[in-house]
Length: 350
Image (tube, rainbow, N blue to C red):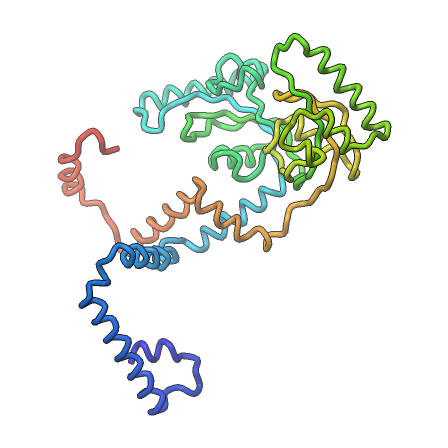
């Protein structure tokens, strides 16, 4: 009766004697098939167990998600996509499971560096002296422009919530404590498709001057009307793109070397060509092929939901669920029981 009512809630022609009788016959056959399958041991095969567990996991998910929290995180991620942040940081490393004493030392060190920067000391110099991010020696702590999902969530949140020109309080991530200086914020650039002609150059190469001269000669030919595809095929040293006119897949902010990215987004007209640009890989001449603004929320919603589930921000959803279940079930710690359980644990329990 329960199954019949469940499957015929909105069926106006249901609940007649003939319809109920027909359904009962189908239901009996269904139950007999299950009984026969079990008698043959089909419910214990690896294939069945694997498939059954897949369905079970799918059915669990709606009950293990705080819908309002999940929707808020997805909307937040989209709203952040509309703004790009340029920020610098100083990292003081501390292990996720460090002792309270070591954690406090790292926090105080980060706080001290923030105070030095606020008192007028150069953030870039401080980053080179004290940051434990290996890239700080090269970039002075500057990370360029980034947007949603390109940094760990606590770092991303602090960067978006700090005003331009200001320095955040120490922010804890799995890497340690960061202080973040927001250099700039700008509307999202969307994505671009470009082609390029590249001459490779190793750092400190003896023939660097000759390569630089060559790229400027090729640039003169490119803007002078030479056939771009032929120029690329003949001279470009990017073997993956030279036979395709130098064309690269579309990319967004944070997905290319900074100088290449900025030169690409600075091009305004389809077919326009950049000045020669140097990156860690060599010299490039870039031509704009296409550009696109960010998609609507409706178009991005499904992919954003998927990324939120895989991202560290999913922990916020999990914690909200735990808090709700504790409240609904009147959860309380019984101190003596907690102490008893912990007395059986060894140092592996964190």
